[in-house]
Image (spheres, rainbow over the protein chains, first blue to last red):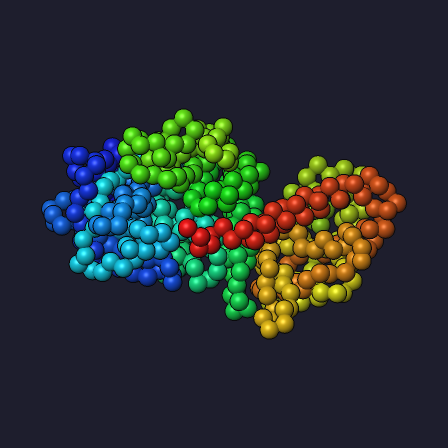
Amino acid sequence: MATMIENEVPQGLNADPMIPQLYRVDRVRDETDDTFTFSLVPENGEAKISFLPGQFNMLYVFGTGEVPISISGNPALTSVLEHTTRSVGIVTKAMCLLKPGDQIGVRGPFGSHWPLNEENGRDLVIISGGIGLAPLRPVLYFLMAQREKYRKIVLLYGARAPEDILFKKELERWRGKFDLEVQVTVDRAASGWRGNVGVVTPLVARAPFDPSNTVALLCGPEVMMRFAVMELQKRGVPHDRIYLSMERNMKCALGYCGHCQYGPGFVCKDGPVYRFDQIVSVFGKSEV
Amino acid sequence: MIHTLETVIREHPFFHDFPEEHLSFITGCAKNVQFPEKHFIFLEGDPADEFYFIREGMVSVEMVIPHLGATTVQTLGEGEILGWSWVSPPYRWHFNAKTLKRTRALVFDAKCLRAKCEEDHNLGYEMLKRFASIITSRLDATRLQLLDIYGHND
């Protein structure tokens, strides 16, 4: 597999990052009753897609608006772009109605990425909740393609209920095939559920990884990440080996408009992936 | 390597920095137990005279709700403590605990320990300090569950 991680951060296909590139919806797949993954291909079929796990695109539903959505596909594929999103706002609800053949505008990719090549040779613990698994799916693709470079890989994933678990088949396949420790927990479940019940953060205490040689990647609701960081600190994982993907109201994606200001920087430009020691002074504070 | 009960207890994070003079008494209150899958370790309303360190397996803490049946509020696994109703009156379980897999645990005679804690407040404080920490963590976790953080709000 081509290791794009080793290259420079991709900055989009278009010379002008404010101008969307035209893409066509190739396939739409329902993940849950309100979450879907759609595959996009460039209308200009010659363009090669390139992104790093953790980056996002601005997706423009014509006539409705533009939203930032993390890329959820395989970074090794250069012909198709995948995004997974939940249908919750005006734009994502309109996006949910798109069908194969419909057009959509794409700007990107933007933002920082997960530190994968920088941290090989270590244990990796990935902690995610809800739709937060989507920006980590490219990480899992990447890791499964280069499994031998890492020691233990542990995925701790929390969802609302068993029917809200994303990428079920892939998780099962990876767990069986690539020596991936997967622990899924749900907030509530009917009597037929045989797995964990409860929030994801207590799973950190009993997860099998060596804190002195571990990198943690976190993505999910901010409150979940706050408690996950506390659990990692209790285990002794240092601040400079904890990475988080932050979410703010990104609009221009270039650090011009200021909508996504976070402390002294902008999530669209300096994030969304941060090393914890870089944001420790503002993390968890309201209105920062 | 053979792990004696004392070694297992000493190495458990719950007993980190536990005063040496109390460890042999604590060890005297403990024994190994095994439960098959789908076994009720305790039932709501029964006397809470034990607590457990889960060494292997998985336990569901559940309550039977009319029209919903048995509903799991939490699962506990390896390394976790099961049961803190022994700490405060009326010393009765508030939930059922059922194994989801074959489970190995250490069971502690909490009735004996409770009496000893009444006699020796230093021991009582050490135990309560540790159980308060567990209760706080469980309360935090419950609050997060109540917040419905993965919910469907925009």
